Image (cartoon, rainbow, N blue to C red; front, side, top):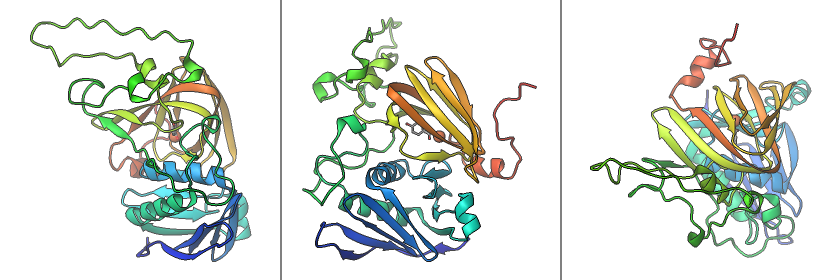
Length: 329
Ligand code: PHB
Ligand code: FE
């Protein structure tokens, strides 16, 4: 694998719209009022700007996640944990047959810097791609005022129980985290904590529904509990997962409220493999050889369990581990 030693360059600024265009390696990126345009030596691609930006800020914030992040069927990134591929058509049967597929590998820092630079230039005040579409403005149109709030909200890992002295705070009304409109009908009892003398300050409990109901972002697991390689993320989901995730390992979903519809396809070709409708209480494992995208018609609470054990992706890729976690046979 050749890793290109390239950095993001600005190639120009459109006087009409105010947006800059960029080059990273052989990829060129520009936007107009409605669309993002990506070109590479053998081809070009066009995407709705909202979709492109919602995918791009998550890809950066998640550190390129596990495996493949498809912005749509054609364009995306693959995480090799240190290096990152940017690909166009490399996992799309039609593009491959037409011979226009392309892939280049960069250091993870170069891609992160590039995507951050592009997002900062292309996102204006009043639009937050991490919010649900009904809860933010639009990215359509000419460049506006520069965004003042931070663009990215990365995973934040809790070291101890959320809300325990010295750890991450639970979200509170007075800190600007109201209960989301979609969860106004839930009960939010606080747990009783009865602690043996001598263990005060070490034992704690929260109402997790209360915490998730106050999340102001969607499809962005924000505070996560980590125990060794086990990563437990909770998130509130509304509208569609703005990326199609191609797994390089199993991951588990536990549906905590409402419902999410998942489209599941072959990772390499995109050929459909299944559809799942998960309702509150349902549990499912996404296999290591698929890509998936979720759709939440109403805001829903989801728990995602990831196995962050380093090197796991190689054990699945080599076939040493089967692509599914449990054999019921
Ligand atoms: C996933 O790709 O599995 C995923 C990503 C973000 C979410 C939920 C699921 O909020
Ligand atoms: Fe996933």
